[in-house]
Length: 151
Image 1: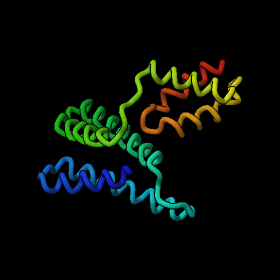
Image 2: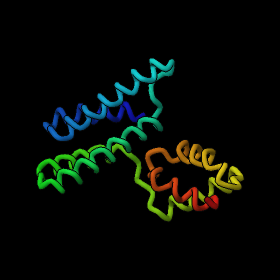
Image 3: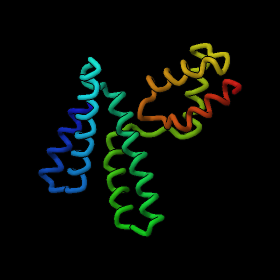
C-alpha cells in the first residue's frame, strides 16, 4: 500500500538525514491528510491508492509549473529545489506511459467498452482513470480520446 511505503520512506529519510526527501515526503503526507479530511467530510473513507496516485501526479504538475516560472525568472536555485521535489514524488509513482503506449491503451479501452462516438468520451476517460491512474497523463489523453472517437 502506498501509505505504508510513504511512512517507511519517511523513517528511512529521517535516519539518513536526507532533508530534501524528508521535507518532500512530509509535503505529500500533508496533502494526503487534507484529502482524507475532505473525503471524510463527504462521508468517504481514506483515499485508495488510485486517488493517491492522482494526487501525486497533481503535485508533480504543480512543481513543474513552478520550476518553469522560477527558471524564466532567473531563480535557478528555486527551480532546482522544485526539480528535486519532483524527483522524490515521481519515485512513488509507477513508470509513466509513453505516447505510443498511451494511445494503444486508449484504443484498447475504446474497443472494450464499445465506444462509438464523442458521446462516449466520459465513459472512456472514466475507464482510463480507473485503470491507469498515475501512469497516464490525462491532460494529453483527453485530446487523443477525442480524436479517436471522431471529435
